[in-house]
Length: 431
Image (tube, rainbow, N blue to C red; front, side, top):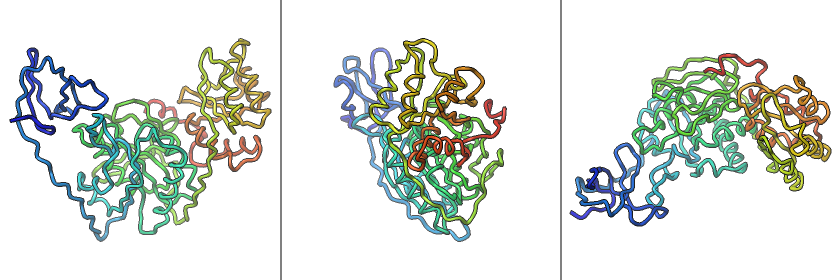
């Protein structure tokens, strides 16, 4: 039989025999390779010159795809699932050999019928993009769609699916954009695409729907693997979470506080941290103004002060500096001195916020002389224990509301969504 795309084939070479699904050659690959997908979900390319024989083991049979009709079950809470794309919504793109955002929320139910035993599902695919392509206007759309569901008295909670890479930016944005939160907003995602056997999507979705239906908090949270196994997920506050690994299934870790809860697929919820607002009957208000001319700048040894000139010349309205340690920048060597440029920014009405690139811990405005130069002499705003990404989102949200640097400082140091911890639990670093 002539091998065709989608067939299971064996490819014989002098060195080895390979078995997998014959795939179209991605346009970005060299033309002299045959591509197959192995059982483990990965693709390999085999040079034509090495191939002695291709044997068809099983012909491709296209399965008829049918959408699952969602029926209402009396006595179950209703959970809205809003899909915004990402790996959790992805399948193979045979033109590139990669994955693309394609699955709709209804597809999730078809692949994971257990969801229908936890809650009645109200589903919508809002957009289908990878998270690295998200921008402030996408967060604003997301906030409006979530608020609409939260203000529906029939909805117990909202699940949001998107990509992992900028998930903590989205959760921070929604944490500030939604005021008077009344129910849980549960962001979930997956590190591995849903068509792979090792995908974490199924467990994450199951736990996220459970959290949206049954968690007693009114908070923006992430719900993703707590360990590399499928034993439970953890709820992390949206302003206190960060992706800390490129590929592990438990990549999202709580930063500077303990997780709020462990969530199990069987419906069990174990509260770990009681510091959250409870469900209530408030009307959620969208406050999604965002200054797009807000920058996040990481300092590094040997950084040219001219970098900050760019933002001043481009008339940026605010800058977060991810500084070293407790909030340090270069203040000694004239060639790399940043304080002069920071002064020029502040003198021109541009607030400069100092966060730490160490991720864990808290900046401090007074411990060292150099820190006092920044805080006292230059009026920089030290962002307590906020993540640099959270401080960036918060500053972009504050700038449309504050008219002076003092007002910006007051708002940046006000705790709106659990982004500032009064005291950091020592166990949070080791969790």
